Length: 164
Image (cartoon, rainbow, N blue to C red):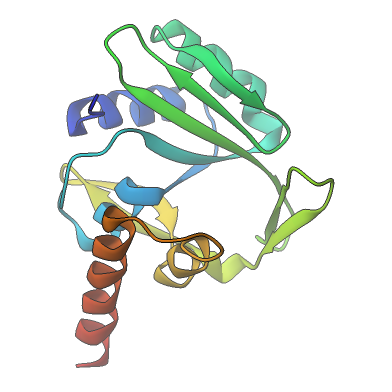
């Protein structure tokens, strides 16, 4: 399995920051951001991006050597670099109230309230990410794999620690 490691994640996020792109980390790296440490190897970096910055984000990623491998716009675009690292970009329509929506493949939308957005830590750096609640929702609607079950267990731990 190709691995998108912490150094590459920080390189990608740093480039998005430098370009002024608004984004949030989700998926496995998003869980790790909420926990504050890497819990496992990750095939890709899942990034929600404000759709107004989608073109700029794609240019930034191209500048880092990424090329589009899967284009399911307006829902998502998966990019891969020659060394096998991957970024899965999810464009969102962000509203003034902080809520967002993402197009689905059937022509509808998934709605995300403003409370779905939080911050976490990757490699000692504070990064925007999706909340525990959002991570749980994003783990619904499909048969969970072993990595999904592990992510959910880590999310349970975060919630238990918050209740203490």
